[in-house]
Length: 55
Image (cartoon, rainbow, N blue to C red):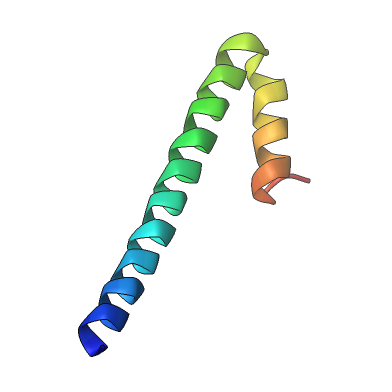
């Protein structure tokens, strides 16, 4: 029984890690797309608003 529970816990941890990596890559690619499509000043403002570093 213990082996099964630790397997579930490890699976949940792996699932959370995959989600974090996915969203990190997604945001990075979205930022690059914004920088290509919009002018750099507008893209920087949008990224600043999303990350909470903007004014």
